[in-house]
Image (cartoon, rainbow over all chains, first blue to last red; front, side):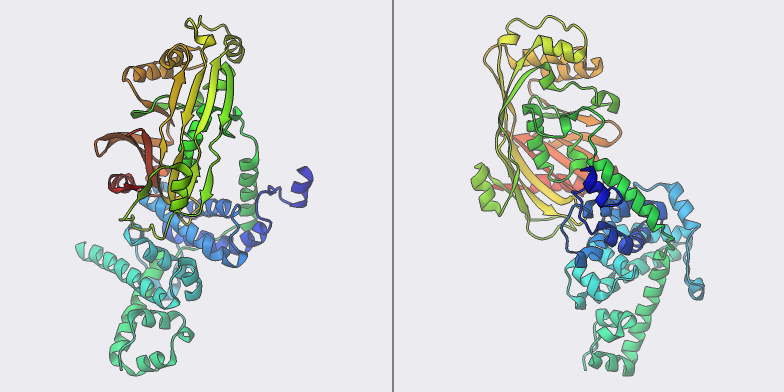
Length: 178
Length: 354
């Protein structure tokens, strides 16, 4: 057993898939990004990403489908965290300080409270819409989102559009109520 | 010409090459579509901004953390090995119940020790006490005569044939749960336990009270199962939904009543007094199934499914919920990555089909 572990380099148990490190290094930033978009917290996003990779390590999901699988797993897990209210306010506050938005859209930047509102609304969306939205905004192509969610590529745009429209309405409703 | 749908316009913003030429050309010349596309673009920008989050990720540190977690998951548990494998009837009984928990080890792993079955009642004890609970095989001879042999079967018909049980029919799946379930089945487990005073004293490191007359000569046959569960897989490794049932555990004695033995065992000094007292109190109810719930990691409440008493447990801050209810000699369960309201609705609407 020790010999096996040695051969596997970083003490990865033999029961874990052999291509895990390669996939991890390629996909980890994106998987963290998916969870971070849902949670608004890098620390919590890393927790979720680690959870997803732990589960993935014991699957036989083909390597070509790994990114989609991991991103969907991270999105679902993060949405579950959102829904359960498991997140800690302090983390949210700390995370908001690290928020980055492109300068040319500075006038569209929403305030911290609105970020929280968007994420609350995100957790109320139909699950498939929410996941498609987050995956797309995390940089997955339409084909990748379609494959990961078992959608036709043609319906990805419709799903994402509906989700964006619902979230925008949420923001507008909040803005008009102030 | 017909205007392209919103989905096409949305994709045109991101991947123009993925849109048919005819649609692209149409949008270029159509004021109405141009306006719709501008609106779509504004929404995409707004939501993109709201969701945007810079993540400066340290991949090396992440990998180190993951390998540590993987190694820890593989390493032997630092506590007694009772929960590592299905070895004793009591643990095997839990194995069948854990079967009903599907892959939801986070929840199922916290429950063990089943004595009676007509009502489900949770007992909450601190983690420190949980790991001190003595394993029954340390109190006598435990002979396992049949194991559950939990396995995945092809379809519902095979599950019914393997177990002789009715299968659950859920017509109104919760939001986010889709597709067809796969089925897990487990055979009946049977074990025989005989109390041994010397072993008990060795396990506890101290003398034990005089056992009830006839206890050491009595054999207790403990059975549970068979069981089956329908599992709708989720994307995060845990079931999105699982619904199943197991024939409730039973205890038979060829000598002193099982309740007498149970009360004696629970009074032994290895068991915290508070827990022993709770268990004895439950025994007076004439039929309970104590579930020992790890304090702080789960919440629970009692309710009813139809007319049957039920216990609802939730873990992971409410992201994972399970309801148990006992009826007609079965322990039924519905659970998954759902809220407690959702699992209760599923439990109430589930029909059992032969």
